[in-house]
Image (tube, rainbow, N blue to C red; front, top):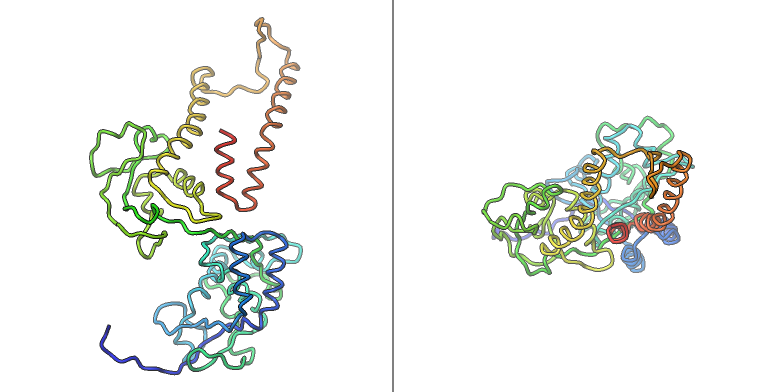
Length: 388
């Protein structure tokens, strides 16, 4: 491209000694499998990496942008590999939030800290192998340096470079707990991995769209560019001409798909947007994002079910009760218009509450069980289908 001839050069790089950490990783993976907190695609991808045998992983790059390797000389002119560096941001963000960050990331024995991670399937190895290895090796100084074509040399002395250096959080989060460095790092026991979300089957065009006036109580409408007479029909309508015709899975870098900023410009309310993404979440297989499906499900489920339920309840309260919900022990009239004693009202209310609880409790338990297992799509389905 530049017309110049490539030159082969020898250089030193920093490595994470994954073979030395394999026994620790095996124990970690076994404990996660026993707990059942990983999705099947997460477990299978991780098992394939471990089955093929781990090799020393080069964690530095000859680039001008990125986080510098914390060493002097030649190594200090390099940057850390982004997928070694990025997960350390989880720790750094916590450290910038609170001086007590180590109570979360290096909890005291007996402290219950649960780390749950959500990701796409292409990011699994970085969160089940590379990052855990970094944390497991933080007190063992198992990273190594080498020369020429990233071929690993013998492991250096513990002072040359270690995962401990790489995982020291930046910012104002200096720890106020002197015993924390001797404690193990918290590792993710629950990891929810999704398949790919494709855009319109990989064949359609990109449009910005807007909800009509019937949805306005729930979905504020942004200014639109093209006038239309159809804004009272309660359907999703395009208000900007197609801009892109790329196909394939959602990709921010390639500009394919619809993301939060696109949804905001289209005037979609955050809750409606989140509901559709959760209800279409590719938990077990690839799924498609379709504008027509978003419109149909929003109007048929959120608007017709949840919205209608709220509208009827609020309208009844406004028309019949002066907009005020009465106390549970209010006067209740019988068919003969005689007033019941307060004790009878309490008994009736208690019986009604018990009956409602008996009906709702199993549904609530199913919903909670699905959400606890990070089955968000099933949780959204249970909530909408079973409750409304």
